[in-house]
Each structure stands twice: as structure tokens, then as C-alpha cells.
Image 1 (cartoon, rainbow, N blue to C red):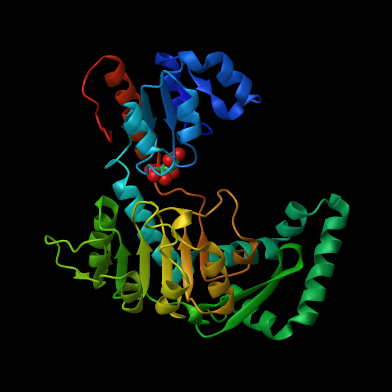
Image 2 (cartoon, rainbow, N blue to C red):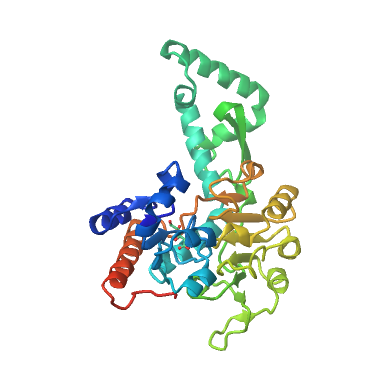
Amino acid sequence: VLMTCPPPDPYLVEQLEKRFTLFKFHSIPDKAHFLNSNKASIRAVVGNASAGADAQLIHQLPNLEIVSSFSVGLDKIDLAKCRERGIRVTNTPDVLTDDVADLAIGLMLAVLRRLCQSDRYVRSVNSCMEGRLVSSSLAVPPFLQIDYYFLQVCVFVLLNIDEVITTLGYISKVNPDCSASLGTLGLRNGAKFAFSKSSWLNFTGKSVGIIGLGRIGLAIAKRAEAFSCPISYHTRTEKSDVKYKYYPSVVELAANCQILVVACALTEETRHIINREVINALGPKGVLINIGRGPHVDEPELVSALVEGRLGGAGLDVFQDEPNVPEELFGLENVVLLPHVGSGTMETRKEMADLVVGNLEAHFLNKPLLTPVL
Ligand code: 8YV
């Protein structure tokens, strides 16, 4: 078995190693040499959302029988080539649906309610007040720490006297409500931390537009309904069995919702389904949530819309060139950035691993595959 992705889960690796001879392609320095010497013995590929089996790899593996993906998404597998060669393909549907849908709702709440910003604020206020900031982020000898901290606070107070008064009111609970105030604290490496409780938006009742109404899209819709969100959707063809409003174009969907969620598979047709026109239709009060794939979005367009304020906010679990994230997003407080963790719970990752291994076992024992794609 050739694992083409970086090992995504220790349990998966352990289970594969118990049953098969596992080659971890990612950590092999001379891949061409490795393939030359081992190509004949490789009968299965295990991949995930970051690496699967492209045409070039399939071409180099003459005895490849099955590709078992540790993902529901199949965009890293050349399905046409597999079909042509009679190579079986399996994925991990259903077991991750709830987690991905939960995360989509989490992102909506996090963006609108500024959860991550609030968390950063509380940590910063506390580490600053206790002087931990200085000792944890700077290599200052212990006997100098108090002085350095004192100096930092003095400089900061002089520069931000108005905000310090407001913030101290909040911290000392003299003014526990502090609802319309703007507190600013000079923190990590001298960066300023702007914090305004009145810039948050509520989530309940916001209209949610979903692109793709498969298992994950439907699970998101069901959850958003519980928050009294009117639901609309876009798919290639209208669904006869759902009551949500259908829009035949993504631009129309974007123009008629406040939160737009990408929940469709990545194909040539859906690449850059979020483009400038869609972003402008969603507008300065709209929020984009992407739990699909990075290339669903024209990322430079998204970045400039967020920087210029043409888009209200974004919650992103996926990026065009993971693990790289456009730097321009780091300074934006209306953006929540996650490292592709939609299915990343212990329970789900175990179920995904069991499916990957179960499919391989079934194949090599000539039994029906558990979750066949091809
Ligand atoms: C995984 C995914 O993050 O299922 C998918 O399509 O993107 C994710 O579940 C990934 O494959 C885990 O390594």
C-alpha cells in the first residue's frame, strides 16, 4: 500500500501497518527512484484531501488495483484514468457529514459573533495584566522582566490613554457592561488590538444560501433551520424533494442571502464558483463560509474584497494552496481561518480510518467494497 498523503491520522497508519506493507510516499526523498524499484509491488494507494492518485502516478503503477481515500472529496483522484484502467476507488462518505456541518455552523457563529477575536482579547488582557506576555514572548532575563513590562505599559498608556481608561473599566469590572465601548490594548510584539463589542452581528434568523445540497449541504441546512434561518440553495438542477428556495444561478443565490456556504464537490465546473461577481452580489454585509475546497473560491478576488470591505466577512476551513494562507487575511478581524479541520474529530477520524482499511480488506478478500465510488 502506498500512502501518497502525509500521514493524516496515527490510528489509520497503525491499522494499515498491521495488515499491509505500508510505504509513506511523502517521507521518501527520492520518489522517482522509489517508484522505479517498487512500482510492481504496489497494489493500493491511500490518499486524502491533500494528495490522492493523479494520472501521472497511476501511469507509473502498473499493478494498481484500488485507491482508498481518507476523504469524502475525490478531487485529488483522476477518476477517468481509474475508470479506464479498471482501478477501484473508495472514499469516506456519511461518517464525516455531521462534523463538517457542525463546523460550518461554528464558522458562521465565529465570524458573526467574533468568537476568535474575543478569545484573543481575553487572553491578551490577562497576559498583559499579569506580565506573562513579556516573559512568554520575549527572551528577557528574569531580573529584567518586571522593568521591561513596566516600561511597555507606560509607553502604551501614554499612547492610548482614552482606550486604557475604558479597558481598565472593563477589566476591573467597574464598568462590566461596557457594551458600546472601544477598548484597545497594545499587546503582542507591540501590535494594537482593537476590540469593539458593538461591531458583532447576531446569527439567529440570518438567511443562509447553500451551494451544493448533498449530504453535507442538507446537514448544514437542517442545523441552520434550528437557528430560524431561511434557507435557499443552488445546485445544477432543482431538487424536487426539498422545501428550500432554489436559485438557478450562484449570483442570484448570493444576492438573496446573508451567509453563503460552499458545500459542493470540487469539479472543473465548480472551480472558482465563488468569483468576483458572486462576491459583489453577496456584498459588504454578506459572509462567505467555505468548508468545501480552496479552489472553489477565486482566492485573490476574495482577499481583495475582504481588504476593501466589499465583503462583510468570511469563515474559511480550506484554502487554494494549503497549508499556505494569504497573509493579507491575518490582520482582518472579520475573518476566521481554520486549518482544514471539518472532519477533524477523534470519533470521525477513527470511522474514516476504519472505512479506508475495511475497503482495502474487502477488496483483497474479494468481498463487496464498503463505500465504492468506482
Ligand atoms: C479531510 C476532507 O480533512 O473528506 C474530505 O474531503 O477534506 C477531509 O475529511 C482530509 O482528507 C483528512 O486527511
